[in-house]
Image 1 (tube, rainbow, N blue to C red):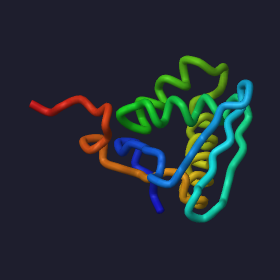
Image 2: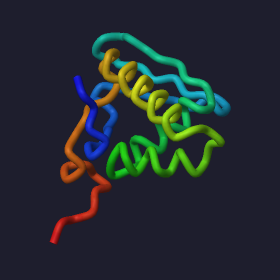
Image 3: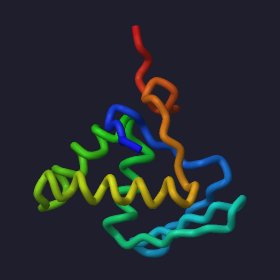
Image 4: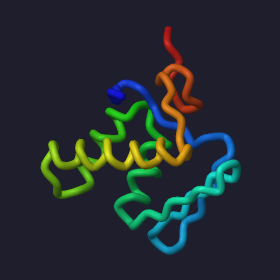
Amino acid sequence: MALSFSNGVAAAPDVMFRMVGDEIVLLNLKTELYLGADAVGSRMWTVLTESDSIQSAYDSLLTEFDVEARELRRDLEEFIGKLLEQGLIEIKPASVLPNAPEKP
């Protein structure tokens, strides 16, 4: 599946998450699958779920981390793939995300 960076990310309805220090644990209550993420993964989760689009999350992370753009894109796509695989997120058009700006 090709991932469009113009889309956004939202936590799936049956997902709980908890920060433990600078790490995060995500649990899908429906499937009982979970994922633990280190500080970088935790930051990716936070920025992805608070941004209007994957692209804006990517842009924000690119300013935060000392990493090559291509490497960050690959890592972000891989992280999103793992989240999707375990049913922890949903991909949504930016216009339906709760924090998306209204269109005129």
